Image (tube, rainbow, N blue to C red; front, side, top):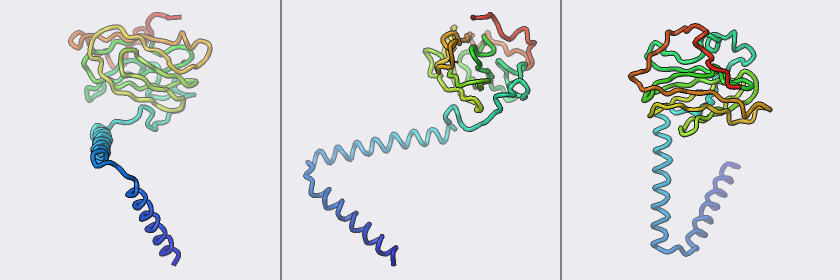
Length: 203
Ligand code: CUA
């Protein structure tokens, strides 16, 4: 019985809204343009949703958790796995750790015109990473892996900056990326010697 009452009430409400909307005088041409803009809006939202679905676009902080306190012990982000690697499918993967106040490793070489997957983790507090002149920017939340796939169209030197306030040394927290022409870039062996990691001290 009660469901019937709710149903009757909603139908009445709908009718009232329609009557009131009809009572408002909207010019014929205006009505037409409202409809056109609604269609454009629906089309654009539709394109974004479909594109994200088919290309598997996710926000950088899709829920993949990691224990920030034991990064050095965990397999993926142990020191010898940091930096640039090519996985067995030929994808270039960069693993970096953010910590007060640096990114590790401090310098990496990546190829231009190649899809590169960056995987970031924080060893302590909230950091961010931003590469000026590119569309790459994400938060690095402790306990989560931030993942971004991007392509550098041109060779060059890019700074890599922390853009979330993380403490007194925040403005010294940066690193460099050298983007090298695709044909000049050679993948380092999967487990490079620790001496090739790190690079110059930027303090
Ligand atoms: Cu790290 Cu600011």
